[in-house]
Image 1: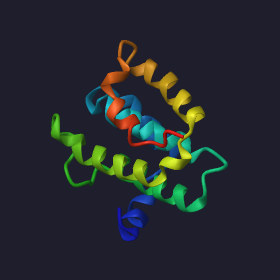
Image 2 (image 1 turned 120 degrees about the vertical axis):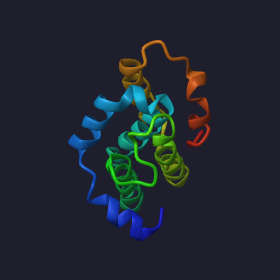
Image 3 (image 1 turned 180 degrees about the vertical axis):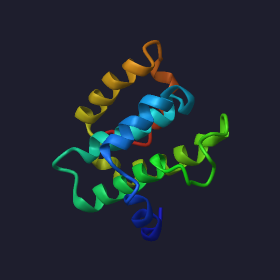
Length: 132
């Protein structure tokens, strides 16, 4: 995501809007999108995550929240593909700040919306994050 895009969508982000979107659209967005968004959200809340990485995360989560993105989220199946692409790019950018504590918090939250999900359903997203 370019700096211009990041700045534009940073204004869309708020913690309340993020949680509202997740609660309303978790099932339609799918486990991969929700998992990627939660990884970024919990990395954002970590004090050791530097400001530049938090800026990337806020811009990305703002894009995710925004109803005005490349592919409207109301379109079944295709609606969240652009969101997932942007989320994965952000994950690759800030991966070193996604540690095991963040992953544990995310897995606990994932179980709320997807209680029967197997890790294989989002394991390719896990590969985008720091494994150290």
